[in-house]
Image (cartoon, rainbow, N blue to C red; front, side):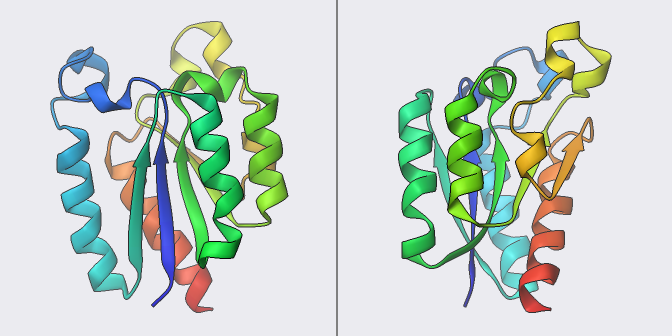
Length: 146
């Protein structure tokens, strides 16, 4: 069974508690339960990782090709807008990646509209809440099976 990694960056461990008017009331654990069920229906496995530290995310991405991961869903949070190193890790992995944002980054502060990581991803889902992860999962599962 192919594995899709779901990586979440800084502050996403606070989902459900941090700015619920923007990010909703569901927690990261709720998202993980939902995606596990959806992945099983799609015939893939999911591996979750969250860190508030850029280097930990880069280390995880760098290890993925040798660990059998077939693709990744990444919500790099604030690192999306600043991290060339994260961008380079995604590109260097050679894996298809979907960038996900819970809120519509283009409808918020101007600095959020620019993504350092989007150019090395096969797609971006933004502003659809946690459902964006589900769309990304289905896309990657279909792509992996094709």
